[in-house]
Length: 454
Image (cartoon, rainbow, N blue to C red):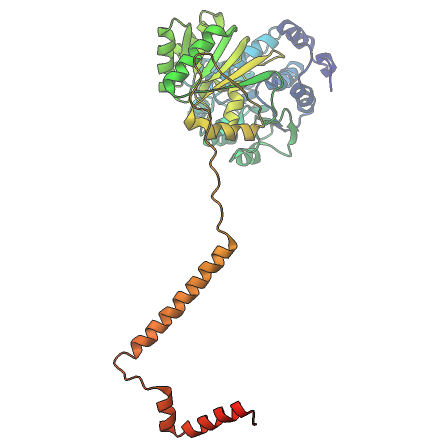
């Protein structure tokens, strides 16, 4: 494994940017991906959130463009991402790493001014970071052009599938230059539908697996608090926010309505919180993120929109007010803390309806939760009551039951036979024998049997 970025033989301008940004030792994903990408290989990379993958694909792209300047061309690299927040985060990474270069980078996302973005496209930035929906609009109208594309990167491809963006991604691939180098990054490579994108995007890819999705993060502790219901959860969360020590905290809910309601409750308790969800327009999103970045609010309530793409230093606490619906979502949420070697705590509040989901997440991720209680706010709910399995009937009882069934069938047959003889005169067998002329013979046989004669 490489121990320093100097071993990659990067241009001086990038080395200066790395030093200013505080990059010293490559992470595992950077150590493996950067040399392979510099060789021009298509890559299929499985890497967890927070593993340093942004620099892993930005540095090879920037190194190629610095050493081989373009001569009158369009966009040379496209980075597709699922959310606006992740697009801005990657742009911020580019600005830090490329501050001593002449490379340019543009951002195309939904929710922003189309006129401003069209002006960005006309400048033909070397690197374009975009969400699929808005970029596809510009491709269909001819305002964007990918005929000069040299790199195509799909970041968090599994998240794009979750958001139903597979069709847009495949359409963009068809618009792009076939003779390109492609890199796909995903937290999990087992997502349904991912093979279809891989088949259209990559040619003979080299696979790189870093930080398996189910591997427990060594710098994150997982706490579990049992709750009795919504109001009980609110009081538990309020107590934790007041008594835990942290610079920034991130609270997740499963719905927009839940995020707004929780924000109103905490603001009513004089907590410095802001709310982020998918229905906010871009200006309001920027305002909320600005408040959180600056520290004017130290707690952000968000839906899973913010589970990926947020890279804010100093998040020491992640709260699952609502338990996520899948194990992968749990990882992406809790991956907002414990970054860059810092320690963090993921706290989950679990009520009775969420117990089975919590057990599924525990098994799927092989996690170890530390069960904790708050003085004065202990839950009456202690987990499901274990029920004894019903004992199977003894074998002898089954045999008796079988005999009884057989006897019932025989009696039923006898009754049917008796019904056939209803109204008929029953004639004794001895009378029948005499009528047939066999009675004397029968008597003689019985007498011979008594005397022992043959």
